[in-house]
Length: 465
Image (cartoon, rainbow, N blue to C red; front, top):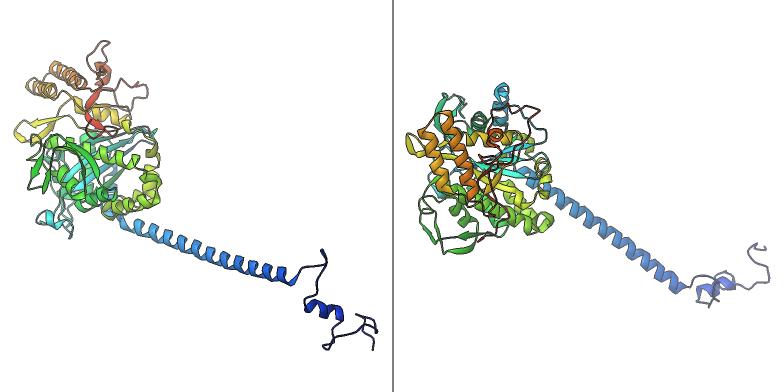
C-alpha cells in the first residue's frame, strides 16, 4: 500500500521511518530557522524544570514565613491577659462614671503592680497573697495625637476610696485612705473608680504590668541610659552604680525606679521624679533606636511587653494595642511629657500626701478638656512648697488665689529655657482667672487659656543634660 505521508519511492530506515525523520533523530544539522535543535530543546526543558523547582521552593518559603508570622502573632496575642472581671465591675457603676468631653482623646491608666506572686517576682519579697499599685500613671493622649501627658499619682496620696468588690465577692466599705490601698481592696476596677472620683476624668483603658514584665522590656531594648548625679549603693534595691551616665539593664532599672530610702531625699515625690526620667528615656530609646521600624528588634520588645501585661478587653489583643498606639509614632519627643500631680505632705501624717488645690483641679480640668499643659524639669521646688504651705495655713478664697499665683511662678521660674512660664498664672493680663476658672468643663464657649507649667520631664532630654 502507498502511505499518504510519503511517496512509494522514498527510502525508509530499518524502523520504517522516512529517511528525513531518521536523520532528525540521528542528529542531522538544520539550517537556521529550520527548527529547534535537540541541544536547545534539552536546555529549555532543564530551565523549565528549575523554574518549577524554584516556584515550589518559593511557595514553601512563603507558606513557612506566613506560618511563622501567624505563629508569632498568635503567641504575642496569647501573651496578653484580659481583665474581664474589672470590665464587668465597671459596667455595674457606669452611671456614676464621668462622661468623656472630647471625642478621640484617650485616657489610659498605667499601673505597676508590686505583686510577688510567680517565680520571677517572688525574689522581691514574701507573697502575702495581695498586691498594691507600686506606680500609677494617668496617660492622656490628645485627640490630635500631637502630645501625650503622663501624670503620676502618689501611692501615699490620701483619697476617697469607694466601696469595692473584693476577689472573694465581699465588699469593702467606702473610706478615706491612701491611694494604693484601692488596688489591694478591689484590683483595677477599684483603682479606676478611685481615680475617676478624684479627677472626674473618664478612664478609657488600663494596663497592669508587674516587676518581671518591666525588667524584660528594658532588657529587650538592650538597656536604657540614665544620668546619676550621685553614686548609688542600695542593698535593698540590690543596686550599686557610680555617678554619671549609666546604661541600666532590666534588674538595675527596676531597682532604680523602686528605690526610695537611699536615693534623693527619700520621698515618694523624688522617686516619682526618677520614674518619670526613666520612662522618658525609655520612650526616647524606643523612638530613636529604630525599634518600631525593625521587626527583628520589635518582636522581643512586643514579646516582653505583652508577656506580663493585663489590660481591659478593649485593647487585649495586638490589633487593639496597635489601634491605640498607631498615632503615637508621630508625636514629637518634646511633646511626650511626664509630671506629678501637685501634692504636699498630708496635714495629719507627714508620711502621706494630699493634693495642692486649686492647682491639682486645674490640671485635671485641662486634661478633661484636652487642653495643653507644660512641664519644667528644674522647677523651683522651694517656691512650690512655700506656696503649698501658705494655701494650707490660709483656707480662705484669697489665700488660694495667692497660692495659685505662687505655684505657677515657682514652676515657671525653674524653666530651663528661661522663658516666662505659667502664662495661666497671675501675670499681666489677668490670665489666672481663665486658667483656674470655675466654668463647667463642658462649656462649649470655653476658650483654652495659656498652658500653665508643672513640675515634670519630657522624652527629648539627653541623659545627662
